[in-house]
Structure formats: C-alpha cells, structure tokens
Amino acid sequence: MDEIDIYRSAKLFIDQHGDQATIQAAMQSDALLAAGNVDGAATWRKIIAAIEVMQATEPEGSLH
Image 1 (cartoon, rainbow, N blue to C red):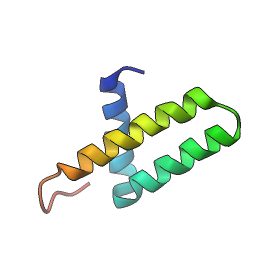
Image 2 (cartoon, one colour):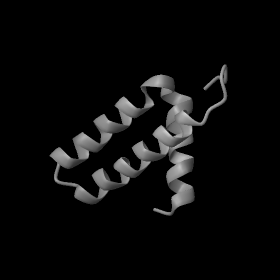
Image 3 (cartoon, rainbow, N blue to C red):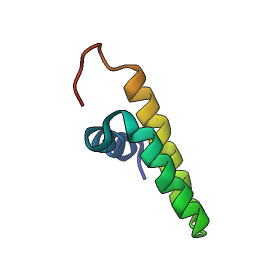
Image 4 (spheres, helix red, strand yellow):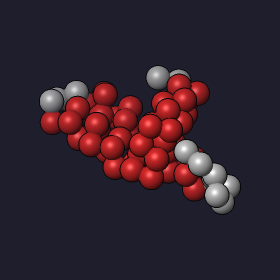
C-alpha cells in the first residue's frame, strides 16, 4: 500500500472513529495478526502511525 493510501485510510478511520481511531485500528491489526495475516497487521500498524501523526497535527477545535 502506497503512503498516500495509508494516509487516506487513516483519514477515513479518523472520520469514522474520532478519538478512538487509534484503538480501533490497533484492534484491526491485532485481529489480523491473530489470524496469521502478518502483512495485513503491518499495514494497519502503518495506518496507526499515520493516525497518530494526523491527530497530533490537527488544529484546536477541529471536528472529525
């Protein structure tokens, strides 16, 4: 998955889950890892990192 797709996925997840986006994405990663899908779990870890970057740089008072 390209970096732009990672950030698009992160944005979508933030829009859907708000402040819980990181937790929900971590649950996705854990579920894939438990199912043996190491590549899928790694992709979700990249999305988690993008979510954290995006949430850290959001302006005050911005809505998800």
